[in-house]
Length: 174
Image 1 (cartoon, rainbow, N blue to C red):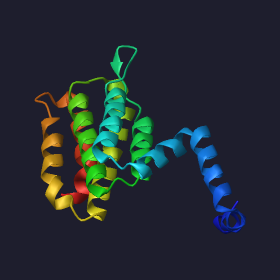
Image 2: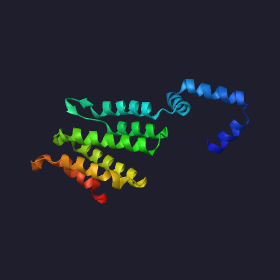
Image 3: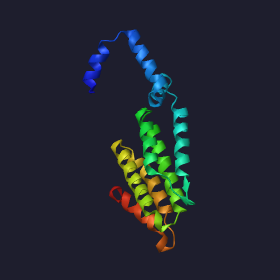
Image 4: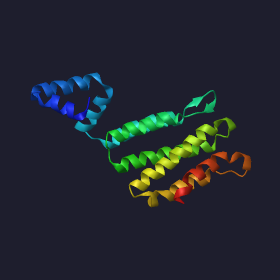
């Protein structure tokens, strides 16, 4: 159904029918409930904290004794947060915290079997830089990102795969 078709259908409803429809949607769909709750009471701090906890749980995920967060889940959590339209600052803060936590956790993980995960984190770092650049604050936050990437480097060359991936991911912004 297109937006135009939906508008035509909704224009035929009375205000009472619209309220009933919204309340039905509110009670049946978790995403709609969350959006309408935030719409009615936009407590950004509380909402940000709830999403931060979900992100931390995923970032700290261990599978078969290996650190193994799912970047697809992390991106979905960030997208759900973005859909609430909490404001650019809250979104940027949550993205930067996520990137910091991923680079810190990736430093301690030195398995050759995790290269796909490291590549995903590199793409996430590039996406974060693009997001910040699009909103005009990359210059303000890029030194922090560089610091996190540089801290992932070790003295043993064979362990620097994570650093090399992160460094090449943010290379266009240097």
